[in-house]
Image (cartoon, rainbow, N blue to C red; front, side, top):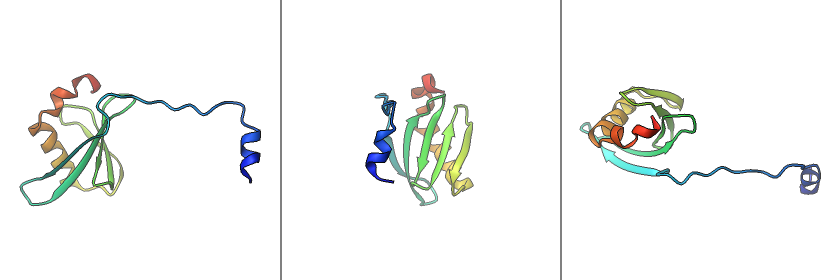
Length: 99
């Protein structure tokens, strides 16, 4: 299918939503066992905070230690490390309005 065929039948423009809160937060840390993590945080549209770990796992954090694995390679130790950094850095308090 050519580009012309695709645009010819388009009746509605493509809409993008953007939020400029604190999205794209990024932290690199190394916990006590020597493993290095890179985490990206962004608010989830319907509540919670998405946490992307090492670009291979996606979690959603809902506060009070409630974290849900969504997709990727699940690792229980990574999940514990995410909770550890959220508690130690006080992100629970910072994110209260999103949880």
